[in-house]
Length: 299
Image (cartoon, rainbow, N blue to C red; front, side, top):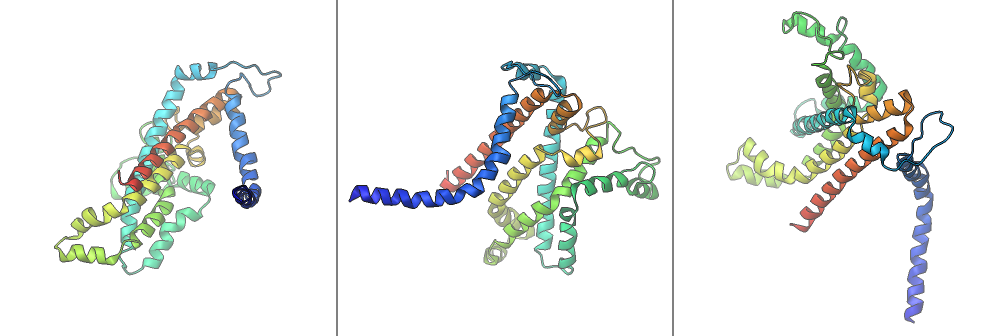
């Protein structure tokens, strides 16, 4: 009887597994298999147009350790990732609180907040290139009109301003998603909690610090972790704005790998770079999951 029950359970489990195959097969073919092929290629000397490929072990990774451009791209990528993530979370929380305050014109405000999300990345990049244009751009025109600058600034070709300029665009482009998630978190907080804090004498800042922020912590950590991983892998927006220039000052790791692969034909080295980026994201994901697990366990 026990053996029959076990066979019945096994048959019952096999049906859901078979039903998952149509969903998992495209994931394996389009994501996991290319990832494994890329990792394997990182241990070879494969170049674009090469007639033969040889296994070279960890030579690409040893070369990477001494590659100044690699470390520079990771430095730029770190600054970009942290700045964009922190900026969008802070501004997104402020916008979410305003949208949750039931002020007049909320419908229009929500449409304006979601507008960047509805614009394709290429259009975003071209639009901001026009805004940043040194002669005909709206930004320089406005700053000259109010007297904050006395001559046009070359925002996207200046060593000083290029990275801050693309960071601003990155925050603006990512703000809708973060704001919507944080707004959903705010709306899940029971109104009775705020009313109790107000009765106890807590002002607006006290309610935010002792009620809203602690209750929003899981939501903030979740969206910050997801956006951190997404921003670290950024490519399209910065490529359209600056193509990594001037002189690599906005060259993110993904841009560096792209140049190695398609500008110089070093597909093996580019694959090794991609593997390192996957490991960085993997470590960030594991750290986030451990934090979430500890909070769920109350540790």
